[in-house]
Image (cartoon, rainbow, N blue to C red):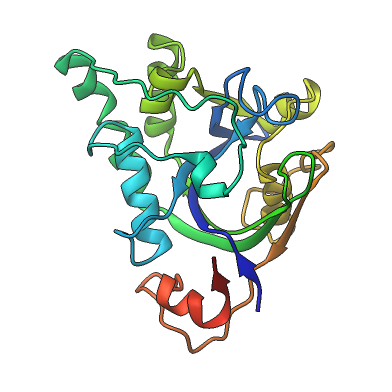
Length: 252
């Protein structure tokens, strides 16, 4: 039984074009936990709270909050991680014109239609990235983008310079369209071990076949499968609920 600090749920939108897989990802700001996670790539999603009964609920709430469809409550990452992970946690109230919010709020539901469970993992973030060491659960979902959805996201990224989510406007992150070829060619880094998750998904044939995965994954983050008994409570999609997960793993 693992002792987990919290649980996150995120989604990986992808499409294969010209023989290489493209992802829609978040790019963190330059002041996000440097020198480790600054300007690093991240999956879209967030962390559980008391409203959520399963990682599916967490994903839906986080995506709809990030893409302006639900009111987003302030969440302290430092409090969640029980450490001063970020030196400054600014609380910024962003108000955009209704016509812009209307355009951006269409993106979240696009990601949630037809998404599938990819897997659940135990993520261990070692010092000095996290001090003390941090271990948490992470459930990953995947979304195979249609050509129309991909073109729409690409257009929105270009029109708004990647500022599509609430985090983009509040904290300086951006949404990017990036290929696996670009990731390796430009030696782009990932936050929170998601580079290793991509490699695990490729090994399991859950992503389109590629010549290689992320060639230079960032160290200091370990990724392992989160194992649970087959008979624990699950959603219709087959995702263990938090009540079910709590049978197999203890949360702080």
